[in-house]
Image (tube, rainbow, N blue to C red; front, top):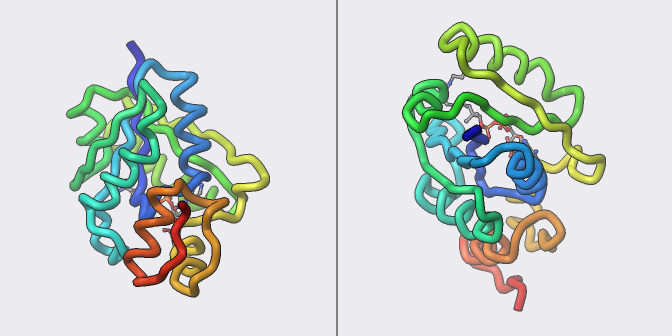
Length: 164
Ligand code: COA
């Protein structure tokens, strides 16, 4: 039984994240989407809202579950008995930061491996902050996020654009 966690702030979860989650779910028996509290990022959505949106966006993937966490990632990985951390790698600019986090996590717990899954070109420049910015300006985010996230963004910004 190989269990992996896919951590992030997911403010909100995007199609780029979902692409990585789906691919991880093909490799591992179980994938836990670990939604970090990330108070330093001052997220738009609350911790519980981000976890709930991630739950709704991943509900069709049978071996994926969603758990909010606070504290150290490696401690959470141990708590849920996951031996692998999966991260998406988009552009080369991600590398330096991811390299640093992976090295630090390895110092903290060298029995937990980090595995990178490369994003396809269409998601290379996608990020949660870009999605928030487009939605804030009443732009169409439907190609970047699930319908539940699109509706939540519209509600957050008090706009009328929502699918269906
Ligand atoms: N597709 C689209 N966007 C992606 C993506 C993908 N595959 N992968 C990452 N992104 C985006 C994210 O949405 C985020 O966008 P934003 O900055 O516009 O909001 C950005 O890229 C950064 O993502 P990521 O590197 O995953 O950072 P994060 O803030 O979402 O999550 C944690 C970072 C939670 C993994 C990290 O802070 C952590 O482990 N925290 C726990 C505390 C801890 O252990 N700290 C010590 C670590 S050494």
